[in-house]
Length: 252
Image: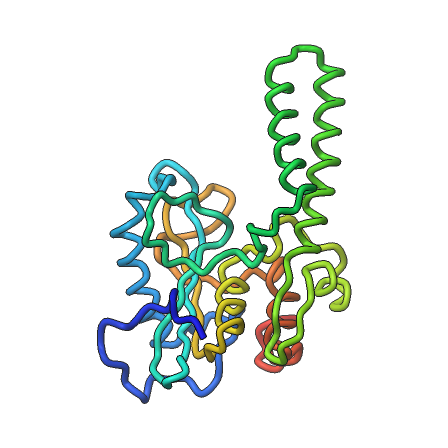
């Protein structure tokens, strides 16, 4: 078992605050233990974000998440993750990784990303509108092909030890084709790491960090439920309990 990314709490944990079951990721009731983990992780972000290649004052903020876990020795700790990607020059990166294996060395993906970048440079240099439109269509088609390959190669675990990729999860759950970046949110990353290393999930929370985009109602450090469009099919599969959320009256 790996405890490499498990953070320890800075204070003693009151056993009365330990939830009996994992809270609903789509609910608004955040357990006190998850809030304690979030506050500790926010202190970490505050201290190290200056070393990240991301300016939260001038760029759009991001969702972060924490998952309180029970280790093999029964002690509690917590994991942290960011939704999407976050370039970082900080060697002490405490984020749970993307579920997609970046060391896969898939030539289709690596060559495709290179070609998309090349198409973008060409589009910026030419003036003929017809040629621009043609190149944009080519770039869009390639981008869709790459997204499909990423979905095929991004595989999630569930509590039974079963594994499915993003396309299979959405198809079997009858949710249709997954939206872009499905699987890159904080909650799936956190649960994937926990299940991969036999860490028992105890409590989960997600919060917004940074400036508020005009298109969203987000406040710095405020808690928000996991997104239903991208996360519901994946979390239902991972927790192996489609009825869990419905029975608690959170999701319709």
